[in-house]
Length: 301
Image (cartoon, rainbow, N blue to C red; front, side, top):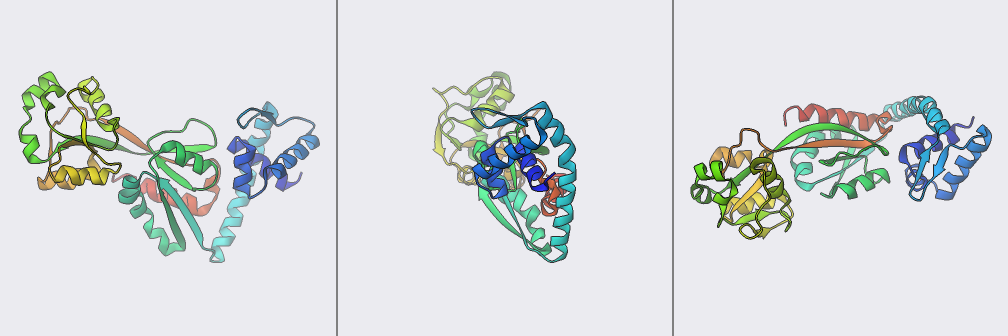
């Protein structure tokens, strides 16, 4: 059986789409379709159900992928090892929210540059956009708080991020902590709010987890909206109001007393970061190495 046909088949099986597979293989969609039809004729069985959006494997297709994929991955590892031995330069394309990528991911991956890698980063906070880019082959790995379910992706939990309600000392001193503990966010009325979006995504998540309620739009509205958490922190430092921030971003400012935690719940709100790659791509040595570096670094995050 032609290995090129099997490689195309496994790529389609993992991508769930002829279009995405064509992009990953560097082929046209008609070429991919033709190769799959050729393989189906050789086997005498259909391998995929054609759907309005993409394809799903038949039982025969699933069985063939289960048998063929490990061997194709092993061949790819051999090819990649030979390329590395020959000194080939590999580019690593990463994508994710600008703050987490800048302060966590890129510093952890930077040492790979000394091992013959180049790094390219896409700063994009929308999970759907970066996952679509990953599926299409525009990125090699993605970090996101939205865990993909199935599809062409393999996701690994990277770390948990704690959220903290913070304000400059002036505003924090105005909060009646006893009232905040007993009556909830009504104690924060009149304090300006800094957020990343008009819909108050971080505040809404915090209010739900800590106070078991939603923000009251009549008494709480953003006075500063800026779509970058680093800018939110700078506004809070400058006295613009209170904000919900990830602890990794604001811990230094908390330690130095430049800002203060307005609340210290017994169970702080958390969200999990995931490292996402295309299924099967860990056969590529430089991606396996990057994943290992991030998992090792995340232990200390």
